[in-house]
Image 1 (cartoon, rainbow, N blue to C red):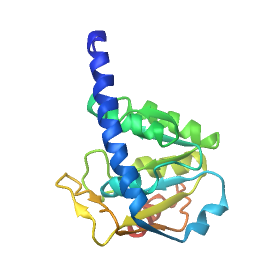
Image 2: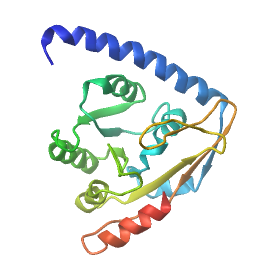
Image 3: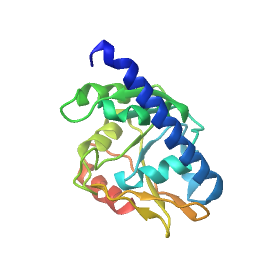
Length: 204
């Protein structure tokens, strides 16, 4: 991006980040959050969390502040600037910017290195552009490369609004109930990759 446009990018990023994050905080303060099977997190200090792209808004409502070191692999596109800022406000230690065709392999390698050093990460295996609920290899390769199991994560709310996006994101409404369900850890190896893919799909 040209240097002269960067101030406008930051202005856009912070203005929308403040507005969007305020909405997340407001909804978080009003919803009733029920955690299920949270005890699986006691097995180790860091994790690879995997969640469908449709649950992203629910994730931002529930986890307004992380309680552990997190790194994220995220889109490098300029219009994602507000989300990048919000992720830092949530306590993300580092953002690795990359996606398919945009330094994705390099960014994935950086996430794997951070995982080996004790950080956790969240990945949407059907992102960034779908198809929906189709698991790509990235999350499986993370587990193979690091020896860290994948924790399936499901966020549901019976009264959530459906946003007209490609993935039909679900947004919890104020004063509703949100269920956060952790699946059993899945340790992926070169020998069980396809079986792990199927199990992960069923668990999210």
